[in-house]
Image 1: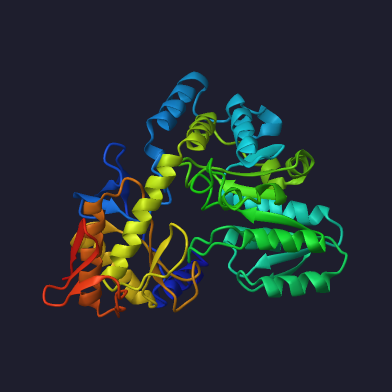
Image 2 (image 1 turned 120 degrees about the horizontal axis):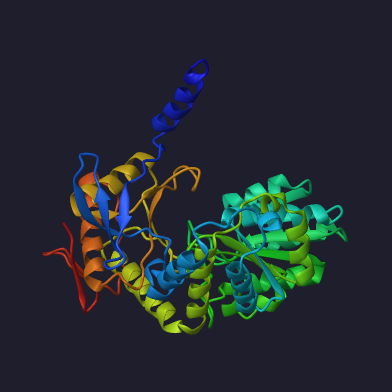
Length: 428
């Protein structure tokens, strides 16, 4: 091929920079999640424990979600048949959008094929429909939000991550022109939670519209699982809430919820919505079942928080460098791309634990990490195995440890670390 050398050079650059991504061939198991079958290159199959799934609550394996998908597929078929404006809107999507609007206390919701597309389409459309709009975007926003901002013709400025003073400074400079503040409620790479109430206060004070990405929070926080804004009592003060069906709800797809007129405008003008094949009815039905279930299952959220709390403390007790935050995200810092990949490989091959390395461009160079995501189905035995394995890998690769918190018992002779009486962790 005439141009093959350019593609070869591009891939080689990624490999030279130690950020070429390798996908592990996994097959999840409904009965034994978080275990999965690893199909190795040599043709053999090995059971592994998955510690980096975004299916935070295990809803992808929940009987009610599976039953809704199977029943709908057997009744109406597998696919959507086309775009909604050509092939019509399936009843399953209508029901799903009603449930999502109700979840967030909004007049309407609109479902997209993914959370990435919903951000791209909604942010760019809203900004372009506001004359002389200024977009104010958090510096740590997700790639999909950045692409939505870039796609718009509006002027844009970036405020420092969760920096209210910098945001207010930009709002004052903007004067009376239309303003759109776009931010996440929970940032998935560092686990930090945004000051949503204070951002809503600033938006009201300076006449700005607010758009929040709750992708990593929906299903997970709040009395009914509507996210951080519900938990913090400001959901009614946020203009547009964006979420995903692929994480806490265990299916796939994305959505936005807000005032009916705003949602109708997005529906009518967003090319990424108009020209995309609709979400298949079986997927919409499974997502709808998950949304309905999680509205009433605060016990699942509580179990998830307990698993997260124990995991964080156990890792810290082992001297592993956990990045502190107030969420369910557990970043274990490596800060070197090559070591991060090596640690991931050793955990998989030696300990049968799967944690994908996180490197640039997902995080800045020099801040590479293993991103651990506990679920309610990770047992204390799973947690103990994880910490023992990670401590062993850290020793093998010479990755720096940190001192365990002073309140944790450390037996120097046996190298046993105990965060909780019921969990003992032996360092290798």
